[in-house]
Amino acid sequence: MGLGREMAFELAGRGFNLLLVSLQNEDLEEVCSEVKKKGVKADFFETDLTIKNNLLELTGHIKNNYNVNILVNNAGIGGSSEFEKTGVSYIEKIINLNIRATVLIIHQLLPDLKKNAPSYILNVSSMAAFSPIGYKTIYPASKAFINHFTKGLNEELKGTGVSASVVNPGPMRTNEYVTGRINKHGTLGKMGVESPGKVANIAISKMFKHRGSFSASWPNRFSLFAIRLLPSGLTLPVLTRAMKKDAGEQKKTPQGN
Image (cartoon, rainbow, N blue to C red; front, side):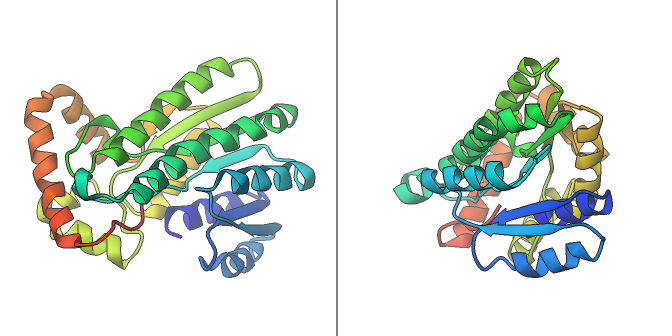
């Protein structure tokens, strides 16, 4: 589960009961058992969040069975491929999971979050949100949407007792596949690499401090400063070359986030 797993342990360590959500066969039952060892309650719900009816079923289940005051939206998918050769179903999957799922879950649960205030929303974006990238065209755009959406929502929610925050992690070694991709990029790929545990700790801490938008580590704050300082005519070709190489090495539909 990577970052999601670490978010669960971070919140459990702070004494919060949890409902974990993911696809089937993601070892949620095992994670719940581990989380309970910290003295909190933990349940799980397995579903495909790219399907609209599943989203409504999930939020209905939450509204009927739990008093929610923290919502963490971490589910997402990305990868590198030539846009023209990317399948329609995969394009839809990125948009439905990275954008629609986050928006609809918040929309459906917001009345409950207000009722149980003080409440917190934490959306997981990415450093990729701050620059377009060739051969990774949809993912950065979807994460840029999450940034703008969260900032606007946070401003709208002022005075309601609910705050919305967005964290923008850099690359993380979440599993062997992702670690292999990072290593293949050499020095460039390893710049700003973060551990999921550290990202989870920083993100949850800043969420409780009502921070709106933030990067998870100083190296990535520096990278963000450089992205904003340098013209896109310089950064975009460099990032695109790296993703073109990555797309060529994958030779299959991108997997994971």
